[in-house]
Structures are given as C-alpha cells and as structure tokens.
Image (tube, rainbow, N blue to C red; front, side, top):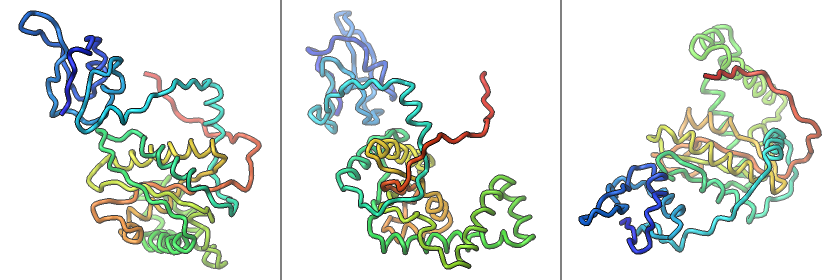
Length: 291
C-alpha cells in the first residue's frame, strides 16, 4: 500500500518527523546500515504529508498517486495585512440580487474540501442551495422548528425561569432576543428573509452523526470558504438558525436529502454585499490567561 524507493531515499527523516500516525522508522539493515522503513502501514491515515514533503519523491501510496500532488508555490502574506483582513471581517446580512458565478462557488467548495478534518476523515459534505423557492421553504421549516423547540415558551415567566435553570443566563439572553424577533416578525408578516437574509446562495455543511468532531470539521471548512469569499468581493454570514434547528429536528436533513446517519453542522450565506463597512467594530475585552 505505502512504500519507499530505497534508490531515491536519502534518509533525511522528513517523513518520520511529519507522519502523525507513527508509520515510519529509521531501522538498521543486515549490514548495519541505516534505512527508513514503513513499520506500521496499517496506521496510515492517508494524510499525504509524507509524499508532499519528501524532497526526492521516494514515497508512494497506492491510494494516493504521486501525479495527483500539485506543486505548492510559496505564498507570503504580511502579517499586518492578514491581521487587518481578518479583523475587518463582517457578517453580511444585506445582499445584492446579483447571482454568484458558479466558478466562484466551485472555488469556495474546493477551499472547504481542503480544510483540516479530525483524523483526516474527510467525511464532511456540502449542499449548495441557489433556488430561491427552496430557500424560502427551508426558512419556514427552520422558524417552525426553533419556535416549537422552545423559543415560544420564553415569553412566559415559567418558561423563562425553567430555561435559565437548564441553559444559564447567556443562552437565555441570546434565545430571548430571537424569541422577540420571531414574534414581532410574525406579527408584522415579515418572516421571509429572516433566516437567510435574501442571500442568493446558502452553502450547507453536514457530517456523520457519530463523529463527535463533525461540528468542528464543518466549522473549519466554512471558515475557509468565508475567508476566500472576501477575496472575491463576496460577503458571507454564518446561518446559525439553520444549524441550531438541525440539532432539534431531522426535518432539515430530510428536506435537503441528507441521509439519516448524517446531520447539518453548519451553513453560510453567500452573496455580494449591498453596503461596505467603513469602520472596524470594537469588541468586548476577553479573559486571556498566560500559563
């Protein structure tokens, strides 16, 4: 499955240093010379790092042909520019009607697919929704699920007190905000656009229910997309309502045609921003402990 060409290997040891699965070892031959051996091939997680880092292309893997590895050009982004880029990120909730080119969406998906995953599982998949009718129907399902799941009870004193006991002050503070929002939007017949803010595209990420790191994997993939989107003059916003509703009901997954062994763990809205932010926004001071 995985092998080392002894005529090419220079015993630099890069593969030993980089392998996360303890596959390689420096061993002695019968003549006393040293050589790098594939000691535990069954432990290989198919991360491909050994092939990518080998300067002599001495390592090969049956499931990862070396011709699929593309040359990686060096990229140097000044840290101050990158910091400014990241700090100026905003959640966009007002989008133009302009459609997002499919080529841009393919590049975003590529960025998500290349995000890190736990144990290199790569089991997170994506659904790209561009159909306005589907987005409107999905919004209605999300609102219904969240309202019935508990938001409606926060309007009463008993429900409010019980929620504080079970979930704590901060979660109740956030939830109460959404209780009022849904209630007032219902009263004014303005529910449409509440969840996806009339974005032309929503990208959903879903993973295996029995993978306890699926939430993290999906979040990292979507964050990759979010960063790349800004270089395309696109705006994004995490669709937290959708992710929350998916944890309470399988209606979301069923509507999107996602199998029962998987669940939605994240989503972002994508589109061209209507407005440009002119100022950075101050943040709360957070506790940082240096140990």
